[in-house]
Image 1: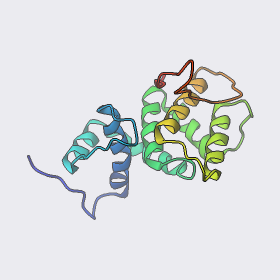
Image 2: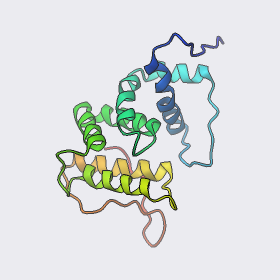
Image 3: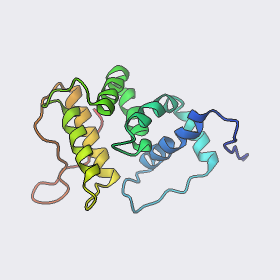
Image 4: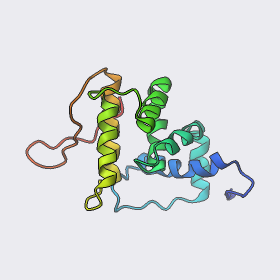
Length: 167
């Protein structure tokens, strides 16, 4: 088995897509919590890039939202969403990044406000899995044309929710 390292000469997008691919690999093997690590080899990254070459197109969208979530998470989620609706995925991430032209009951507006508020609160940080769940819920509501007033993912209490699926 030949190892294929990332080299200095590779395009920036390929190297930067590695973070999104890491999220994708975690998803594929069912690792969702922060406490569980994934030690993938460069060969495994390259194989994943071969299986999912379009993830490179999502890198720019991941960078667009890096001030409100990890760019690797943004890259991965944009990629997942673009498999369902490429145009809506692009629009969703541009609106999330820019915050312009949004109405107060749009899911992407509620999500953006929640993530920005989270950035300000230094005493409590949402886990990446919680952020992912909220982004998926906002995406699903957007796809369904729903208007919302709040965005939550309940993991405890009387009626905990399953992790949302990308619709």
